[in-house]
Image (cartoon, rainbow, N blue to C red; front, side, top):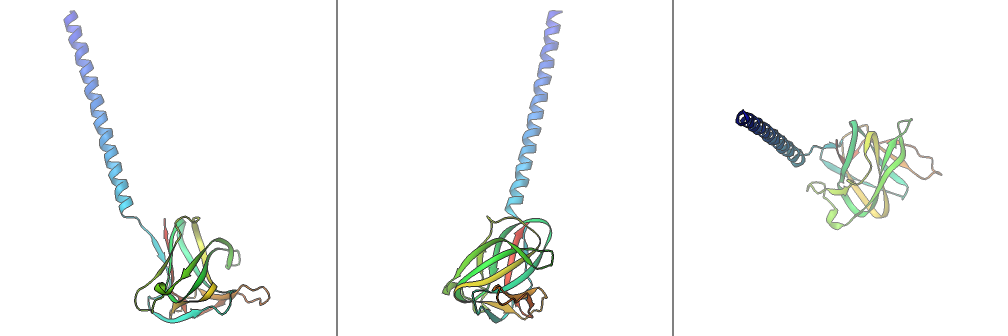
Length: 199
């Protein structure tokens, strides 16, 4: 009788052990599957590239003063997005301040979200046909959502950027000098400026 009980207990213990091994294998397989999915997502990230130009630079935009600003309005897809990079085609060397603004209640550039400075050197200058773009890394900047405005103005030298002949209805100029009281003026040409964000 005791021998039968021992066999029965041994059989149950083996069953529990086999069940634990099965659960362990299932968990390991699930973990391996999850890891593979994460690797696949990391290997192929998605981004939105926001732009209005047609990739054909035909004229340059110069900045006659330190307060003169070129403005581009961009409407991001729904939700919050991490800025990745800003790219532009430089037509002449100099130093640019690039400011990303919130959208205010009047559908105009509001408070600055962040600003970066980019020095354009000879190697950055494009002839408008060589596919050369200047990049500004934005990966450590705050998240963006809704409508944002990209402003560019000179800080030193005589920088210039290429523009395309596209009439986007989203490109403007303004003078930040409060004495001149020049608000947003729509322009027919669109600057060769693009913003890349990740969802």
